[in-house]
Image (tube, rainbow, N blue to C red; front, side, top):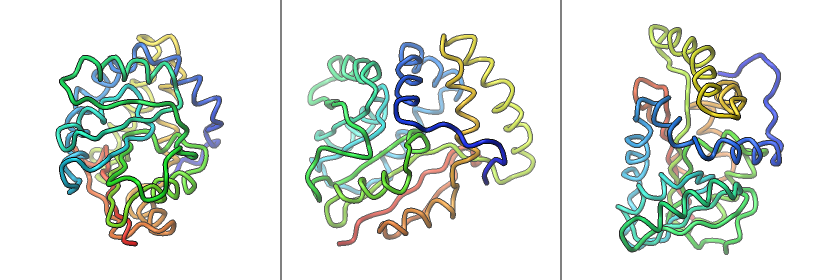
Length: 238
């Protein structure tokens, strides 16, 4: 379901500046605003992959590296990419503190990954795909770097389908979340942008159709935590 409001600004420089500015408080706000559920969702995304141990995996729009750390429990060959250098600096500090073997982060735009075609066993993205300037181009690039039978796991916020949950969720999302974000972070606009970007993002069947249109097969979705988050999966079959 999409908002009838003005489209959010997804210019690459605008998004990079916004998330770089919130990087120091990003993890704190993630834990607070999700009641610490974001870590569980990331573990569920990692567990959804059926990749063999040692298969190369890339987490795109990786932020401060939490999804890459969750993936490390499935494979030792994990990479993280994000175009925000302040986010990656935090991610790489986490990776250095983790037990070896640890992930490695590098700066890259999801629309132009510096990797050969068919080089990865899996690609993941958690709560970042709605921020890209061109959704279909990002999905196509993720597909390009997947090996045959390679998998994708995508976490994204969604609107609950239950009307009983939707009304209080929307009230929280539109009124409380931006205020908490503005109180804790010096760049509170990121947390006004968040609900707008979620409501304008294609959800469930709409999104799996977009995945299939660029070439993913077996695209499916699963509601998590009452439908406030969706886990999307798919694969490259040739």
